[in-house]
Length: 304
Image 1: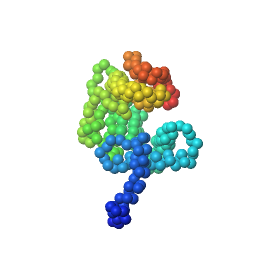
Image 2: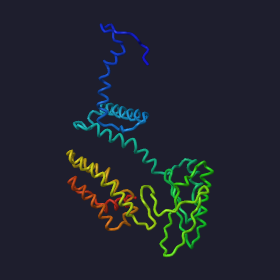
Image 3: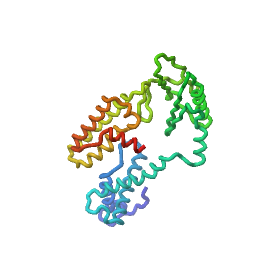
Image 4: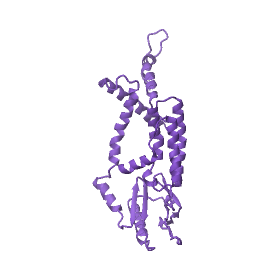
């Protein structure tokens, strides 16, 4: 990679490129040291990701140096100015994307695609999220014609737009509270009958035939209990209570309130008590009172 083979005038006649590297490597070592304090790097075996992580770390540090040089009074006197800067930088980078995703696409091409895939019958509802598609049909008087027609229409539309449906991952769940029922034959996708199931996961929430939420709540409790270990470890490390509250809110409370507006009203008293025990355990670890799940659910409902 180096074409300059000139030697130094020193007695050992070291190559000049070696001396140049030795005289400037201190800056590289110092940069590695400061970026390691707050790094986005994760363990990976893919070298492009390693390079990307390093680019993000170096760019964030360079931005911090420029920002503090221009705004010297910004958070002056605080020893964790860089952490505060990185928090604000991350929020500033993701906020435009969050606002953009909060609204449906409005370009003419996107609007035309949405218009073509719209459901034409009032008893059938199509829910699309990223690459997941859910078709919900309200069947009355054992008349499935509208539901099956929309399934065939969706399959035909995907085929005409070079989209391939994965028949092996496509399932059907029937919710029927009648005492005596005869299950109808399942519809077909790509000449393959759809598997009938008793429950399925939709955007992280387990929906069952009896519309009970115990599987979902048990899964949330298990995840939250696993993360309580890290909260206790941070407490042993004598982190301030405010930082412990921030950790709880971001890592544990976010799990307990996942889709809470969907399942909380239908949860049993026993399940609500199981969830609240996690909150009380966190309060004992942190030493501060925390919002109850009832309050969080009401706040989420009013926000929606």
